[in-house]
Amino acid sequence: MPSDNTERLFLDTKPGHLFFKAAIPGAMGMLASSLYYLLEGILVGRVLGAEAFAGLNLAMPFVIINFAISDMIGVGSSVPIAIKLGRGEKKDANGIFSAAIIMIMIAGVVTGALLFTFAPTLFRMMGADEHLIPYAVDYLRTYACFSPFTTLVFAMDNYLRICGKIKGSLLMNIGMASSCVLFEMFFLIVLKGGISSAAMGTCFGMSAAVITVLSIFLRGRMELRFTRPRFTAKLIRMIVSCGLPTFLSNVSGRIISIIMNVMLLSLGGADAVSVYGILMSVDGLVMPLLYGTCDSLQPSVGYNWGARRFDRVGSIERYCFGTGAAVSIIFGVFLFLFPDFAVSLFIEGESTGIHILGSGAVVLASIAYAFRWIAICTQCFMSAIGKPFFAASISVSAAFIFPLVLIIALRPMGLDGIWLNLPGTALLTAMLALFILTRYKGIVRKENESFRISEESRP
Image (cartoon, rainbow, N blue to C red):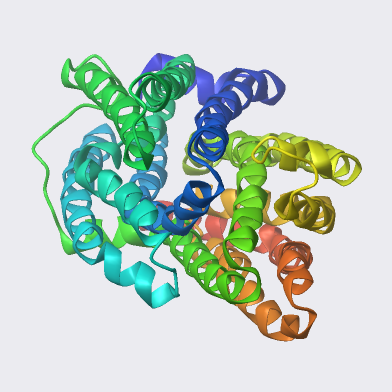
């Protein structure tokens, strides 16, 4: 049976109290991690220059792809683990947990080795010139070397929250972000290192966080414990299917970023790549708040879904959607009114070509936040209740299908067409998410019918 603490937190805590106890710390923890990436961009841009910043942004899609498979396993295992715990099947939950850790480490070795080997070829195929390639290669290869350890960090965050250790998750993210900043400032400012030092600072901070949390699980005092893993085809299919929306979103989104970078290099060179990097860095401020809020409540949503407490599922999700709308719209209005502030964080000098180009891009991109929260909240909800097809439909459409369609449709507009890709994608994906949400009552009816048949078939 699940522990009293976990059951009391997920099943008995009032939805409003649960939201403040779980979602807000989770969002703050994810924001702390993302603030580090923002600070990294600022440090690289101001200490090493605009060309290094462009190289970082060329490499970043591949860095995220490196995490994508491991993140898929972490998220994919979290959903069935939470549902199993909600049903009182603790032994099965521990088996999934133990197998997932091993799978993540193996994936980290494989993807890291591939990216280290083919890094120069990848950037030459993108059309990067010989000035940008060394920056991008050094940055990516540093991440690749640490891949077996750093790729565990997102899964550790999920597993802490499943165990009801909300504060532990928050402390892990804040500690990791702080360590990364300190390491990077030391390497870049004190030791005057290059761009590989920036990546090394992140990897040191991530590795320290992973080792600390792993040691806690190894002591055997958590809700989840290491057991002898049993790898089965059914288990792997379960993990992959539940984590597929996150994986597809990460990978397809990075493919689009690579395509964007290729177009940006041809339309505006390194300056255009830097502006796109600014948009993605700024986006990294609001997206953690949206994903963090919804993702932090996924264990409780899955737990209640497994316990057939559909009324609580609906109550919890209302808090997710309401908060997501408020955060996203307020952020969009701020960017629309103060675009120069966003650009000046990364690039000095208001008269530079990058600054002028970037301010216009930020204004156009800010429109996206009027709609973006709808798809994110819906995707996380569908993942939490074990409906990967609906979640994957949203994630693939948001990260790949709609952006690709709009790249083609808006190509005659040049750079403005690229900046408008974000709001156009947000609007189309919101329409798809609203259509999927209309099927929620039908999903509940099917779950109840399936449960009734299962109960009647028992001897």
